[in-house]
Amino acid sequence: MSNEKVKVDRQAMPNQEVIRRIKNFDEVALGYSEEQALLEASRCLNCKKPLCVEGCPVEINIPVFISYIKEKKYGDALRTIKEKNNLPAICGRVCPQENQCEKRCVLGKKYRPVAIGGLERFVADWDMQQGRIAEPQPAVPSGKKVAIVGSGPAGLTAAADLARLGHRVTIFEALHTAGGVLVYGIPEFRLPKSIVEKEIFGIRRLGVEIKTNMVVGKVHTVDELLAQGFEAVFIATGAGLPYFMDIPGENLNGVYSANEFLTRVNLMKAYLFPEYLTPIKLGEKVAVVGAGNVAMDSARTALRLGARETYIVYRRSEQEMPARAEEIEHAREEGVQFKLLTSPVEIKGDAKGWVKALICQRFELGEPDESGRRRPVAIPGSEYEMEVDTVIMAIGQGPNPLIGQTTPDLHLNRHGNIIADGNTGQTSKLAVFAGGDIVTGAATVIQAMGAGKKAARAIHEYLQNSSGQVSAP
Image (cartoon, rainbow, N blue to C red; front, side, top):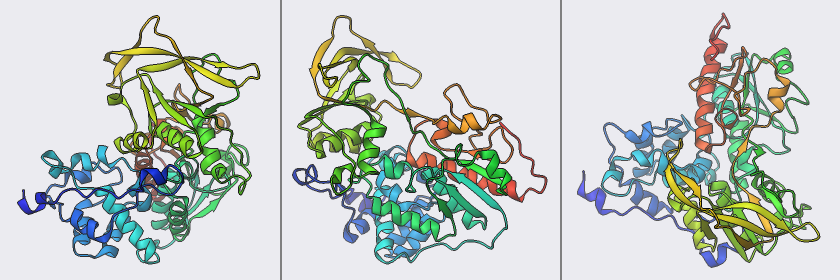
């Protein structure tokens, strides 16, 4: 291992100062300067067997794009990324690299891994600043039509890959804006919507048509899309159905699902009220139940909306939190308080039906459960009252049942997720594929993109197969 490379410390991502950022919705992470990017790229060992690539769900040739950065060939770096990933500016911001490519980085075995995500963001932002000079060109038209249901990360990835293979792709999006969870779920301070719009514009330039306000299952069924001449359908509707705890008081005023709360703020611009006519009522003391990225987003958003105190309420310890370490660190810096080994058992209301307190029970950790995390065990008689006036439930979400209800020969599991082959996305229904959260349950943006990429490959093979026969799972 080169001593020169390890002498260079991993470059810290510049961030907005805490005292400023808790008062605005501007992006927190500011991105590398060119000098920082070159220093960080110099740390890459250019391994003969790059394990980082094996850790990337969309198979980016990481050492090659970093080598181009070292040579200041930023356009070539981005073209290398875009051979596999059509949303690099998004992935560079929200992909959990620490659990994927960076986790496999050889340098990370003795030192801190190369900041692959920060470098991906650098070249993607550079390209946008230059006016998108590295757009790939679609292939010769195949004459085949594909419908994609949902414009989140899985749908966008599949659409771009299929368009680049020459197929005519139409995305049907239920909301009035394309982007799925990228626009309704992730706050502006973590993923600016202008970045999402630019990435989607690049996909439109490949020839992809996006139809919004199109609720498949209502406006058209999957069978109707096939009857209209689409030769394959990819279902990528995500996980938008919020879960609740089924405890007393969840119907009180002041109780939100994280899905509703973040959609109001992010997609409907409630943080800019009255410029945008979407009100949101928030108290001074906000409890967010859960400890994933959605919970951190909700807690940090509540502070920016003026909450005096915001709490994360989680029944395990910090070690078991599913959120990214960076998001936990940012939340703590901004003043979010953590009530760990604690879970609500009741929400109490006042005489007018508004939240006034959370009744919580303390927990201790037992043996690991099927997730590998230690199981929380309630401590009898440990209940206590916590004064709050808003509760946000961020304990996960599941599939909207509409497509399953309107496609009777589509096999679902007991949770309502579509059953599909993990390598191809093929469902029980001929010519219908599925991928992302609608199959796996709520997961990460990059995992959904990986599913979209696999499905696009399988759909292309299916369209090329004159017999039209594929094996269902």
